[in-house]
Image 1: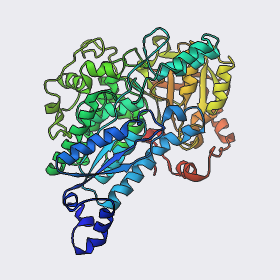
Image 2 (image 1 turned 120 degrees about the vertical axis):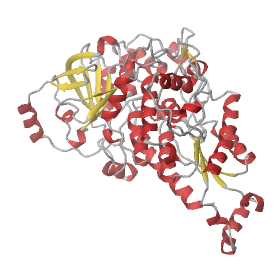
Image 3 (image 1 turned 60 degrees about the vertical axis):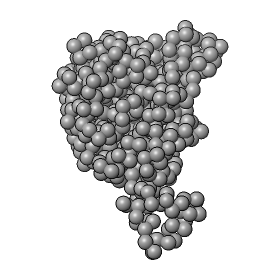
Image 4 (image 1 turned 120 degrees about the horizontal axis):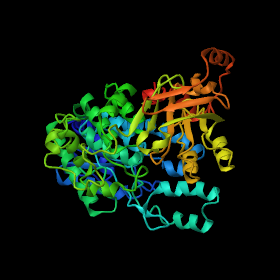
Length: 553
Protein backbone atom coordinates (compact mmCIF):
# COMPACT_ATOMS: atom_id res chain seq x y z
CA UNK A 1 0.00 0.00 0.00
CA UNK A 2 1.07 3.58 -0.66
CA UNK A 3 0.28 4.36 2.98
CA UNK A 4 3.01 1.96 4.10
CA UNK A 5 5.39 4.81 3.31
CA UNK A 6 4.06 6.68 6.35
CA UNK A 7 3.17 3.86 8.75
CA UNK A 8 5.32 0.73 8.27
CA UNK A 9 8.72 -0.16 9.77
CA UNK A 10 10.88 0.98 12.65
CA UNK A 11 11.95 4.12 10.77
CA UNK A 12 8.32 5.22 10.69
CA UNK A 13 8.03 5.27 14.48
CA UNK A 14 7.91 9.10 14.50
CA UNK A 15 5.18 9.06 11.86
CA UNK A 16 3.06 6.59 13.83
CA UNK A 17 3.52 8.64 16.96
CA UNK A 18 1.93 11.58 15.17
CA UNK A 19 -1.01 9.44 14.06
CA UNK A 20 -1.43 8.24 17.65
CA UNK A 21 -1.39 11.83 18.85
CA UNK A 22 -4.64 12.14 16.86
CA UNK A 23 -6.11 8.98 18.38
CA UNK A 24 -5.47 6.43 15.62
CA UNK A 25 -5.10 2.86 16.86
CA UNK A 26 -2.71 0.16 15.67
CA UNK A 27 -5.56 -1.68 13.97
CA UNK A 28 -6.62 1.48 12.12
CA UNK A 29 -3.07 1.95 10.89
CA UNK A 30 -3.03 -1.62 9.56
CA UNK A 31 -5.84 -0.80 7.18
CA UNK A 32 -5.66 1.29 3.97
CA UNK A 33 -5.64 5.02 4.64
CA UNK A 34 -8.41 6.68 2.65
CA UNK A 35 -8.71 10.45 2.28
CA UNK A 36 -12.24 11.83 2.45
CA UNK A 37 -11.76 15.21 0.79
CA UNK A 38 -14.83 17.30 1.48
CA UNK A 39 -15.73 20.94 0.97
CA UNK A 40 -18.06 21.48 3.93
CA UNK A 41 -18.46 25.12 4.93
CA UNK A 42 -20.95 27.63 6.27
CA UNK A 43 -20.76 29.96 3.23
CA UNK A 44 -22.00 27.69 0.41
CA UNK A 45 -25.63 26.43 0.62
CA UNK A 46 -24.64 23.43 -1.46
CA UNK A 47 -21.95 22.59 1.09
CA UNK A 48 -23.63 23.44 4.38
CA UNK A 49 -24.49 19.77 4.93
CA UNK A 50 -21.36 18.17 3.51
CA UNK A 51 -20.07 17.34 6.98
CA UNK A 52 -22.93 14.83 7.23
CA UNK A 53 -22.35 13.50 3.71
CA UNK A 54 -18.62 13.13 4.35
CA UNK A 55 -19.31 11.29 7.61
CA UNK A 56 -21.60 8.87 5.77
CA UNK A 57 -18.89 8.27 3.14
CA UNK A 58 -16.41 7.66 5.97
CA UNK A 59 -18.85 5.22 7.58
CA UNK A 60 -19.00 3.28 4.31
CA UNK A 61 -15.20 3.20 4.04
CA UNK A 62 -14.80 2.02 7.62
CA UNK A 63 -17.45 -0.69 7.27
CA UNK A 64 -15.60 -2.00 4.18
CA UNK A 65 -12.24 -2.24 5.92
CA UNK A 66 -10.59 1.14 5.38
CA UNK A 67 -9.51 3.93 7.70
CA UNK A 68 -11.11 7.20 6.57
CA UNK A 69 -9.30 10.49 7.17
CA UNK A 70 -11.16 13.79 6.77
CA UNK A 71 -9.46 16.55 4.75
CA UNK A 72 -11.18 19.90 4.05
CA UNK A 73 -11.26 21.75 0.76
CA UNK A 74 -12.16 25.33 -0.09
CA UNK A 75 -15.22 26.19 -2.12
CA UNK A 76 -16.66 29.43 -3.53
CA UNK A 77 -20.42 30.05 -3.73
CA UNK A 78 -20.89 31.56 -7.17
CA UNK A 79 -24.25 33.04 -6.20
CA UNK A 80 -22.81 35.00 -3.28
CA UNK A 81 -19.66 35.90 -5.23
CA UNK A 82 -21.79 37.12 -8.18
CA UNK A 83 -21.81 40.73 -9.34
CA UNK A 84 -18.72 42.04 -7.55
CA UNK A 85 -14.98 41.46 -7.43
CA UNK A 86 -15.51 38.15 -5.61
CA UNK A 87 -16.50 36.49 -8.86
CA UNK A 88 -12.95 36.97 -10.13
CA UNK A 89 -11.92 34.28 -7.66
CA UNK A 90 -14.51 31.68 -8.62
CA UNK A 91 -12.99 30.06 -11.71
CA UNK A 92 -9.48 30.62 -10.37
CA UNK A 93 -10.41 28.64 -7.26
CA UNK A 94 -10.69 25.51 -9.42
CA UNK A 95 -6.92 25.45 -9.82
CA UNK A 96 -6.33 26.10 -6.12
CA UNK A 97 -8.61 23.19 -5.24
CA UNK A 98 -6.75 20.81 -7.56
CA UNK A 99 -3.34 21.97 -6.36
CA UNK A 100 -4.20 21.79 -2.65
CA UNK A 101 -5.70 18.30 -2.90
CA UNK A 102 -2.71 17.06 -4.87
CA UNK A 103 -0.51 18.46 -2.09
CA UNK A 104 -2.44 16.94 0.80
CA UNK A 105 -2.95 13.47 -0.66
CA UNK A 106 0.60 13.16 -1.99
CA UNK A 107 2.20 14.49 1.19
CA UNK A 108 0.43 12.01 3.48
CA UNK A 109 0.55 8.79 1.50
CA UNK A 110 -3.14 7.98 1.04
CA UNK A 111 -4.12 4.77 -0.73
CA UNK A 112 -7.43 6.01 -2.13
CA UNK A 113 -9.55 9.14 -2.18
CA UNK A 114 -13.25 9.81 -1.73
CA UNK A 115 -14.21 13.22 -3.08
CA UNK A 116 -17.22 15.02 -1.56
CA UNK A 117 -17.96 18.17 -3.60
CA UNK A 118 -21.17 19.79 -4.71
CA UNK A 119 -20.94 23.24 -6.25
CA UNK A 120 -19.56 24.85 -9.34
CA UNK A 121 -15.74 24.81 -9.34
CA UNK A 122 -15.29 22.25 -6.61
CA UNK A 123 -16.43 19.33 -8.78
CA UNK A 124 -14.04 19.98 -11.70
CA UNK A 125 -11.23 20.99 -9.34
CA UNK A 126 -11.56 17.66 -7.56
CA UNK A 127 -11.81 15.72 -10.83
CA UNK A 128 -8.60 17.40 -11.98
CA UNK A 129 -6.93 16.37 -8.72
CA UNK A 130 -8.21 12.80 -9.07
CA UNK A 131 -6.61 12.57 -12.51
CA UNK A 132 -3.27 13.94 -11.29
CA UNK A 133 -3.13 11.62 -8.28
CA UNK A 134 -4.45 8.57 -10.17
CA UNK A 135 -5.30 6.62 -7.04
CA UNK A 136 -8.57 4.69 -6.67
CA UNK A 137 -11.19 7.42 -6.34
CA UNK A 138 -14.92 7.93 -6.19
CA UNK A 139 -17.17 11.00 -6.18
CA UNK A 140 -20.12 11.57 -3.88
CA UNK A 141 -21.79 14.96 -4.28
CA UNK A 142 -24.01 16.63 -1.71
CA UNK A 143 -27.01 16.57 -4.05
CA UNK A 144 -29.34 19.24 -5.43
CA UNK A 145 -31.52 21.62 -3.47
CA UNK A 146 -35.26 21.09 -3.59
CA UNK A 147 -37.00 23.69 -5.78
CA UNK A 148 -38.50 26.68 -4.02
CA UNK A 149 -41.64 28.59 -5.00
CA UNK A 150 -42.33 31.70 -7.04
CA UNK A 151 -45.12 34.21 -6.36
CA UNK A 152 -47.64 31.98 -8.15
CA UNK A 153 -46.67 28.93 -6.11
CA UNK A 154 -44.82 27.27 -8.99
CA UNK A 155 -41.50 25.48 -8.55
CA UNK A 156 -38.67 28.00 -8.78
CA UNK A 157 -34.94 28.39 -8.25
CA UNK A 158 -32.21 30.97 -7.73
CA UNK A 159 -32.72 32.16 -11.33
CA UNK A 160 -36.10 33.51 -10.29
CA UNK A 161 -34.48 35.75 -7.66
CA UNK A 162 -31.86 37.11 -10.05
CA UNK A 163 -34.44 37.86 -12.73
CA UNK A 164 -36.72 39.45 -10.16
CA UNK A 165 -34.09 42.14 -9.58
CA UNK A 166 -34.42 43.11 -13.24
CA UNK A 167 -38.20 43.12 -13.00
CA UNK A 168 -38.06 45.29 -9.86
CA UNK A 169 -35.66 47.74 -11.55
CA UNK A 170 -38.04 47.99 -14.51
CA UNK A 171 -40.96 48.73 -12.19
CA UNK A 172 -42.61 45.38 -12.91
CA UNK A 173 -42.37 44.05 -9.36
CA UNK A 174 -42.94 45.56 -5.94
CA UNK A 175 -40.39 45.55 -3.14
CA UNK A 176 -42.80 43.41 -1.10
CA UNK A 177 -42.92 40.73 -3.80
CA UNK A 178 -39.16 40.89 -4.21
CA UNK A 179 -38.83 40.14 -0.48
CA UNK A 180 -41.28 37.25 -0.75
CA UNK A 181 -39.13 35.66 -3.46
CA UNK A 182 -36.01 36.22 -1.40
CA UNK A 183 -37.55 34.03 1.29
CA UNK A 184 -39.00 31.31 -0.94
CA UNK A 185 -36.83 30.41 -3.94
CA UNK A 186 -34.00 28.64 -2.06
CA UNK A 187 -35.65 26.43 0.58
CA UNK A 188 -32.61 24.69 2.06
CA UNK A 189 -29.23 23.06 1.57
CA UNK A 190 -28.00 21.57 -1.68
CA UNK A 191 -26.73 22.80 -5.02
CA UNK A 192 -29.21 25.22 -6.64
CA UNK A 193 -32.11 23.21 -8.01
CA UNK A 194 -31.90 23.78 -11.78
CA UNK A 195 -29.49 22.49 -14.41
CA UNK A 196 -26.92 25.06 -13.43
CA UNK A 197 -23.15 24.49 -13.32
CA UNK A 198 -23.00 22.50 -10.07
CA UNK A 199 -25.71 20.05 -11.06
CA UNK A 200 -24.35 19.88 -14.61
CA UNK A 201 -20.95 18.76 -13.36
CA UNK A 202 -22.38 16.33 -10.81
CA UNK A 203 -24.50 14.71 -13.53
CA UNK A 204 -21.57 14.63 -15.97
CA UNK A 205 -19.46 12.87 -13.31
CA UNK A 206 -21.82 9.89 -13.68
CA UNK A 207 -21.28 9.84 -17.45
CA UNK A 208 -17.51 10.09 -17.01
CA UNK A 209 -17.75 6.98 -14.86
CA UNK A 210 -16.43 8.56 -11.64
CA UNK A 211 -19.63 8.27 -9.57
CA UNK A 212 -22.31 5.65 -9.06
CA UNK A 213 -25.91 6.26 -10.11
CA UNK A 214 -27.68 9.11 -8.32
CA UNK A 215 -24.69 11.38 -7.76
CA UNK A 216 -26.22 14.23 -9.74
CA UNK A 217 -29.90 13.90 -8.89
CA UNK A 218 -30.68 12.49 -5.41
CA UNK A 219 -31.93 15.44 -3.35
CA UNK A 220 -29.58 16.78 -0.70
CA UNK A 221 -32.16 16.40 2.08
CA UNK A 222 -33.37 12.90 1.28
CA UNK A 223 -32.31 9.87 3.27
CA UNK A 224 -31.31 8.29 -0.02
CA UNK A 225 -28.44 10.78 -0.22
CA UNK A 226 -26.97 9.44 3.05
CA UNK A 227 -27.39 5.86 1.83
CA UNK A 228 -25.75 6.85 -1.44
CA UNK A 229 -22.79 8.28 0.47
CA UNK A 230 -22.31 5.10 2.50
CA UNK A 231 -22.55 2.98 -0.65
CA UNK A 232 -19.98 5.23 -2.35
CA UNK A 233 -17.54 4.70 0.52
CA UNK A 234 -18.03 0.95 0.35
CA UNK A 235 -17.58 0.94 -3.42
CA UNK A 236 -14.32 2.86 -3.13
CA UNK A 237 -12.83 0.01 -1.11
CA UNK A 238 -13.81 -2.39 -3.90
CA UNK A 239 -12.07 -0.13 -6.42
CA UNK A 240 -8.95 -0.20 -4.24
CA UNK A 241 -9.06 -4.00 -4.16
CA UNK A 242 -9.50 -4.10 -7.96
CA UNK A 243 -6.85 -1.38 -8.48
CA UNK A 244 -9.18 0.62 -10.74
CA UNK A 245 -7.91 4.18 -11.05
CA UNK A 246 -9.23 7.44 -12.55
CA UNK A 247 -7.06 7.25 -15.67
CA UNK A 248 -8.51 3.81 -16.35
CA UNK A 249 -11.95 5.40 -16.32
CA UNK A 250 -11.58 8.94 -17.71
CA UNK A 251 -10.56 8.08 -21.27
CA UNK A 252 -11.23 9.86 -24.55
CA UNK A 253 -14.38 7.79 -25.03
CA UNK A 254 -15.58 8.60 -21.52
CA UNK A 255 -15.23 12.32 -22.19
CA UNK A 256 -17.21 11.96 -25.40
CA UNK A 257 -19.90 10.20 -23.37
CA UNK A 258 -19.83 13.15 -20.98
CA UNK A 259 -20.25 15.59 -23.85
CA UNK A 260 -23.19 13.60 -25.21
CA UNK A 261 -24.93 13.67 -21.83
CA UNK A 262 -24.13 17.39 -21.62
CA UNK A 263 -25.98 18.01 -24.89
CA UNK A 264 -28.91 15.77 -24.01
CA UNK A 265 -29.47 17.42 -20.61
CA UNK A 266 -28.83 21.02 -21.74
CA UNK A 267 -26.05 21.62 -19.24
CA UNK A 268 -24.34 24.86 -18.30
CA UNK A 269 -21.90 26.42 -20.76
CA UNK A 270 -19.34 26.23 -17.95
CA UNK A 271 -19.04 22.52 -18.71
CA UNK A 272 -17.21 23.55 -21.88
CA UNK A 273 -14.56 25.13 -19.64
CA UNK A 274 -14.39 22.31 -17.13
CA UNK A 275 -14.47 19.16 -19.26
CA UNK A 276 -11.45 20.28 -21.37
CA UNK A 277 -9.59 21.20 -18.17
CA UNK A 278 -10.26 17.78 -16.63
CA UNK A 279 -9.37 16.09 -19.93
CA UNK A 280 -6.10 18.04 -19.99
CA UNK A 281 -5.14 16.45 -16.66
CA UNK A 282 -5.95 13.05 -18.15
CA UNK A 283 -3.78 13.61 -21.23
CA UNK A 284 -6.87 13.86 -23.44
CA UNK A 285 -7.52 16.74 -25.84
CA UNK A 286 -11.09 18.00 -25.91
CA UNK A 287 -11.38 20.67 -28.58
CA UNK A 288 -14.29 23.02 -29.23
CA UNK A 289 -14.64 21.37 -32.63
CA UNK A 290 -15.31 18.05 -30.89
CA UNK A 291 -17.78 19.74 -28.54
CA UNK A 292 -19.74 21.07 -31.50
CA UNK A 293 -19.54 17.79 -33.42
CA UNK A 294 -21.07 15.94 -30.45
CA UNK A 295 -23.72 18.66 -30.14
CA UNK A 296 -24.70 18.32 -33.79
CA UNK A 297 -25.30 14.57 -33.46
CA UNK A 298 -26.88 14.50 -29.98
CA UNK A 299 -30.49 15.63 -29.52
CA UNK A 300 -31.58 17.75 -26.57
CA UNK A 301 -33.89 15.62 -24.41
CA UNK A 302 -34.43 17.82 -21.33
CA UNK A 303 -35.49 21.38 -20.65
CA UNK A 304 -34.57 21.78 -17.03
CA UNK A 305 -34.51 25.21 -15.37
CA UNK A 306 -33.53 27.80 -16.54
CA UNK A 307 -34.55 26.48 -19.99
CA UNK A 308 -37.82 25.05 -18.62
CA UNK A 309 -39.77 24.55 -15.41
CA UNK A 310 -38.51 21.13 -14.34
CA UNK A 311 -35.70 20.69 -11.82
CA UNK A 312 -33.14 18.10 -10.75
CA UNK A 313 -35.55 16.27 -8.45
CA UNK A 314 -37.86 15.87 -11.44
CA UNK A 315 -34.98 14.46 -13.48
CA UNK A 316 -34.29 11.95 -10.72
CA UNK A 317 -37.89 10.78 -10.56
CA UNK A 318 -38.02 10.53 -14.36
CA UNK A 319 -35.16 8.02 -14.50
CA UNK A 320 -32.13 10.08 -13.56
CA UNK A 321 -28.85 10.36 -15.41
CA UNK A 322 -28.72 6.62 -16.01
CA UNK A 323 -32.15 6.78 -17.64
CA UNK A 324 -30.84 9.40 -20.09
CA UNK A 325 -27.62 7.42 -20.67
CA UNK A 326 -29.60 4.24 -21.36
CA UNK A 327 -31.66 6.10 -23.96
CA UNK A 328 -28.52 7.49 -25.59
CA UNK A 329 -26.86 4.07 -25.56
CA UNK A 330 -29.87 2.37 -27.13
CA UNK A 331 -29.67 4.87 -29.98
CA UNK A 332 -25.93 4.51 -30.54
CA UNK A 333 -25.07 7.97 -29.22
CA UNK A 334 -22.63 6.94 -26.46
CA UNK A 335 -20.03 4.20 -26.00
CA UNK A 336 -21.17 1.58 -23.50
CA UNK A 337 -17.72 -0.01 -23.27
CA UNK A 338 -16.12 2.59 -20.99
CA UNK A 339 -15.18 1.58 -17.44
CA UNK A 340 -16.98 3.03 -14.40
CA UNK A 341 -16.49 3.13 -10.62
CA UNK A 342 -19.18 0.48 -10.48
CA UNK A 343 -16.39 -1.89 -11.52
CA UNK A 344 -18.27 -2.67 -14.74
CA UNK A 345 -18.73 -0.93 -18.07
CA UNK A 346 -21.15 1.93 -18.55
CA UNK A 347 -23.34 -0.30 -20.69
CA UNK A 348 -23.56 -2.87 -17.89
CA UNK A 349 -24.16 -0.15 -15.28
CA UNK A 350 -27.19 1.35 -17.08
CA UNK A 351 -28.70 -2.00 -18.08
CA UNK A 352 -32.38 -2.09 -17.22
CA UNK A 353 -32.65 1.68 -16.75
CA UNK A 354 -35.17 3.66 -18.79
CA UNK A 355 -37.09 6.90 -19.09
CA UNK A 356 -39.98 6.95 -16.59
CA UNK A 357 -41.54 10.31 -17.48
CA UNK A 358 -41.36 11.60 -21.04
CA UNK A 359 -42.55 15.02 -19.92
CA UNK A 360 -39.15 15.46 -18.23
CA UNK A 361 -36.87 13.28 -20.38
CA UNK A 362 -37.95 13.00 -23.98
CA UNK A 363 -36.96 9.99 -26.07
CA UNK A 364 -34.44 10.39 -28.87
CA UNK A 365 -37.29 9.89 -31.35
CA UNK A 366 -39.11 12.99 -30.01
CA UNK A 367 -36.50 15.44 -28.69
CA UNK A 368 -36.85 19.10 -27.85
CA UNK A 369 -34.36 19.71 -30.63
CA UNK A 370 -32.29 17.57 -32.97
CA UNK A 371 -29.12 19.23 -31.74
CA UNK A 372 -27.63 19.41 -28.26
CA UNK A 373 -27.97 22.12 -25.66
CA UNK A 374 -24.65 23.87 -26.40
CA UNK A 375 -23.37 25.33 -29.68
CA UNK A 376 -19.91 26.59 -30.60
CA UNK A 377 -19.86 29.69 -32.80
CA UNK A 378 -17.00 30.97 -34.94
CA UNK A 379 -16.39 33.90 -37.22
CA UNK A 380 -14.24 37.03 -37.34
CA UNK A 381 -15.52 38.01 -33.87
CA UNK A 382 -14.52 34.65 -32.37
CA UNK A 383 -11.99 32.89 -34.61
CA UNK A 384 -11.07 30.50 -31.79
CA UNK A 385 -14.67 29.95 -30.79
CA UNK A 386 -17.49 31.18 -28.58
CA UNK A 387 -20.12 29.21 -26.66
CA UNK A 388 -23.89 29.56 -26.25
CA UNK A 389 -26.49 27.46 -24.43
CA UNK A 390 -28.80 27.26 -27.42
CA UNK A 391 -31.41 25.24 -25.52
CA UNK A 392 -32.08 28.36 -23.41
CA UNK A 393 -32.33 30.79 -26.37
CA UNK A 394 -35.74 31.95 -27.58
CA UNK A 395 -36.49 30.84 -31.17
CA UNK A 396 -36.66 34.43 -32.40
CA UNK A 397 -33.11 35.08 -31.13
CA UNK A 398 -31.43 32.12 -32.83
CA UNK A 399 -30.65 34.58 -35.61
CA UNK A 400 -30.10 38.21 -34.72
CA UNK A 401 -28.38 41.30 -36.10
CA UNK A 402 -28.04 44.57 -34.27
CA UNK A 403 -25.84 47.44 -33.11
CA UNK A 404 -23.13 46.88 -30.54
CA UNK A 405 -23.42 48.51 -27.13
CA UNK A 406 -19.87 48.25 -25.82
CA UNK A 407 -18.83 48.06 -22.16
CA UNK A 408 -15.40 47.45 -20.68
CA UNK A 409 -16.45 45.38 -17.69
CA UNK A 410 -19.64 44.04 -16.13
CA UNK A 411 -20.32 46.96 -13.82
CA UNK A 412 -20.70 49.50 -16.64
CA UNK A 413 -23.08 47.17 -18.50
CA UNK A 414 -25.25 46.58 -15.42
CA UNK A 415 -25.49 50.32 -14.80
CA UNK A 416 -26.64 50.93 -18.37
CA UNK A 417 -29.20 48.11 -18.28
CA UNK A 418 -30.75 49.28 -15.01
CA UNK A 419 -30.79 52.85 -16.34
CA UNK A 420 -32.95 51.73 -19.27
CA UNK A 421 -30.29 52.60 -21.86
CA UNK A 422 -30.44 49.24 -23.72
CA UNK A 423 -32.95 49.10 -26.55
CA UNK A 424 -34.66 46.22 -28.32
CA UNK A 425 -32.38 44.85 -31.03
CA UNK A 426 -29.14 45.86 -29.30
CA UNK A 427 -26.18 43.54 -28.86
CA UNK A 428 -24.58 44.17 -25.47
CA UNK A 429 -20.82 43.56 -25.58
CA UNK A 430 -18.98 43.07 -22.26
CA UNK A 431 -15.24 42.71 -22.70
CA UNK A 432 -12.03 42.54 -20.69
CA UNK A 433 -13.70 39.88 -18.58
CA UNK A 434 -11.76 36.91 -19.99
CA UNK A 435 -9.53 34.53 -18.00
CA UNK A 436 -6.53 36.88 -18.16
CA UNK A 437 -8.23 40.23 -18.70
CA UNK A 438 -10.70 40.02 -15.85
CA UNK A 439 -8.83 38.36 -14.45
CA UNK A 440 -10.88 35.32 -13.53
CA UNK A 441 -13.54 35.23 -16.27
CA UNK A 442 -16.50 36.42 -14.23
CA UNK A 443 -20.01 35.08 -14.76
CA UNK A 444 -22.45 37.56 -16.28
CA UNK A 445 -25.60 36.35 -14.53
CA UNK A 446 -26.35 39.86 -13.31
CA UNK A 447 -26.65 41.44 -16.79
CA UNK A 448 -28.46 38.49 -18.37
CA UNK A 449 -30.91 38.17 -15.47
CA UNK A 450 -31.58 41.90 -15.55
CA UNK A 451 -32.41 41.70 -19.25
CA UNK A 452 -34.61 38.64 -18.70
CA UNK A 453 -36.41 40.27 -15.79
CA UNK A 454 -37.11 43.31 -17.96
CA UNK A 455 -38.49 41.08 -20.68
CA UNK A 456 -35.60 41.78 -23.05
CA UNK A 457 -34.15 38.26 -23.27
CA UNK A 458 -36.17 37.85 -26.49
CA UNK A 459 -34.99 41.12 -28.07
CA UNK A 460 -31.43 41.77 -26.83
CA UNK A 461 -28.30 39.62 -27.23
CA UNK A 462 -25.23 39.68 -24.99
CA UNK A 463 -21.69 38.78 -26.04
CA UNK A 464 -18.70 38.54 -23.71
CA UNK A 465 -15.21 37.10 -23.31
CA UNK A 466 -16.38 36.29 -19.80
CA UNK A 467 -18.69 33.41 -19.01
CA UNK A 468 -22.22 32.75 -17.84
CA UNK A 469 -23.89 31.03 -14.95
CA UNK A 470 -25.73 27.82 -15.68
CA UNK A 471 -28.74 29.83 -14.52
CA UNK A 472 -28.46 32.16 -17.53
CA UNK A 473 -31.07 32.11 -20.27
CA UNK A 474 -31.37 34.12 -23.45
CA UNK A 475 -29.05 34.85 -26.40
CA UNK A 476 -25.99 34.96 -24.15
CA UNK A 477 -22.77 34.15 -26.02
CA UNK A 478 -19.65 33.78 -23.91
CA UNK A 479 -16.08 32.48 -23.90
CA UNK A 480 -15.28 34.67 -26.94
CA UNK A 481 -11.75 33.70 -27.94
CA UNK A 482 -9.26 35.26 -28.30
CA UNK A 483 -10.30 37.49 -25.41
CA UNK A 484 -9.95 41.27 -25.44
CA UNK A 485 -6.87 41.17 -23.21
CA UNK A 486 -5.10 39.11 -25.89
CA UNK A 487 -6.06 41.56 -28.63
CA UNK A 488 -9.00 39.52 -29.89
CA UNK A 489 -11.51 41.09 -32.27
CA UNK A 490 -13.85 41.74 -29.37
CA UNK A 491 -11.37 44.45 -28.27
CA UNK A 492 -11.83 46.23 -31.61
CA UNK A 493 -15.62 46.64 -31.51
CA UNK A 494 -16.88 50.22 -31.41
CA UNK A 495 -20.25 51.53 -30.31
CA UNK A 496 -22.83 51.04 -33.06
CA UNK A 497 -20.92 48.43 -35.07
CA UNK A 498 -23.29 45.81 -36.44
CA UNK A 499 -22.94 42.28 -35.07
CA UNK A 500 -24.52 39.28 -36.78
CA UNK A 501 -25.45 36.18 -34.79
CA UNK A 502 -26.52 32.98 -36.55
CA UNK A 503 -26.63 30.11 -34.06
CA UNK A 504 -27.95 27.43 -36.48
CA UNK A 505 -25.07 28.28 -38.86
CA UNK A 506 -22.65 28.56 -35.92
CA UNK A 507 -21.53 32.07 -36.95
CA UNK A 508 -20.61 35.18 -34.95
CA UNK A 509 -19.55 38.08 -37.16
CA UNK A 510 -18.56 41.70 -36.70
CA UNK A 511 -19.76 43.41 -39.87
CA UNK A 512 -16.76 45.69 -40.23
CA UNK A 513 -14.37 45.47 -43.18
CA UNK A 514 -10.90 43.99 -42.76
CA UNK A 515 -9.07 47.25 -43.48
CA UNK A 516 -10.95 49.10 -40.77
CA UNK A 517 -10.24 46.29 -38.31
CA UNK A 518 -6.55 46.39 -39.28
CA UNK A 519 -6.38 50.11 -38.49
CA UNK A 520 -8.16 49.61 -35.17
CA UNK A 521 -5.81 46.79 -34.23
CA UNK A 522 -2.77 48.97 -35.00
CA UNK A 523 -4.14 51.70 -32.73
CA UNK A 524 -5.16 49.29 -29.93
CA UNK A 525 -3.34 49.82 -26.65
CA UNK A 526 -2.95 46.80 -24.36
CA UNK A 527 -4.83 47.19 -21.10
CA UNK A 528 -3.47 46.14 -17.77
CA UNK A 529 -5.49 43.46 -15.94
CA UNK A 530 -7.84 44.77 -13.30
CA UNK A 531 -5.84 42.90 -10.66
CA UNK A 532 -2.05 42.51 -10.87
CA UNK A 533 -1.11 41.37 -7.37
CA UNK A 534 -1.66 38.30 -5.22
CA UNK A 535 -3.15 35.04 -6.45
CA UNK A 536 -5.21 36.70 -9.20
CA UNK A 537 -2.14 38.49 -10.50
CA UNK A 538 -0.32 35.17 -10.84
CA UNK A 539 -3.43 33.60 -12.37
CA UNK A 540 -3.66 36.34 -15.02
CA UNK A 541 -0.06 35.73 -16.07
CA UNK A 542 -0.40 31.94 -16.30
CA UNK A 543 -3.95 31.18 -17.47
CA UNK A 544 -4.73 29.88 -20.96
CA UNK A 545 -7.53 31.01 -23.26
CA UNK A 546 -11.12 29.94 -22.60
CA UNK A 547 -11.12 27.69 -25.66
CA UNK A 548 -8.37 25.66 -23.96
CA UNK A 549 -10.33 25.34 -20.71
CA UNK A 550 -8.69 28.30 -18.92
CA UNK A 551 -6.05 26.02 -17.42
CA UNK A 552 -2.77 27.22 -15.95
CA UNK A 553 0.13 26.80 -18.32
